[in-house]
Image (cartoon, rainbow, N blue to C red; front, side):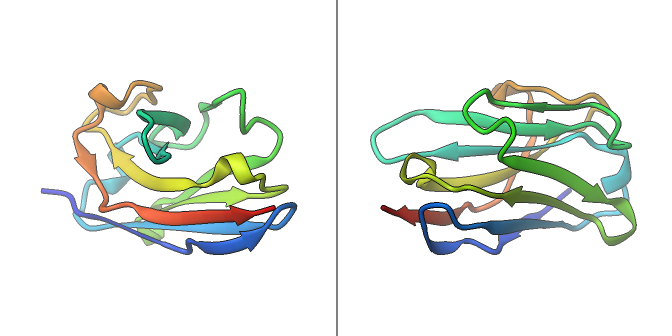
Length: 124
């Protein structure tokens, strides 16, 4: 069983930055692809970014490309999402997710483990 706990969310002004962290329990973290998704009020959960087990294959949603950076530290069982140049439309609950597979995925249905979510609010 893998448990994921997000941290680092909060309130920030437009143009600001936040770094989300996702700490994973379990000894097999390094074998899993990880991803970030977000869900705004009244909307579906959307893909944000994903990284494969060794960090060599990364994908971003077009809406965050060039502003967000995903990374992982397998020694610390942690995946990060650095968010720069934040916009009000980035406001959402952000979820960390993990797969049992090595390869990254942009589809929420292909993830097996989810964190509880953390609020990110960007004011204009």
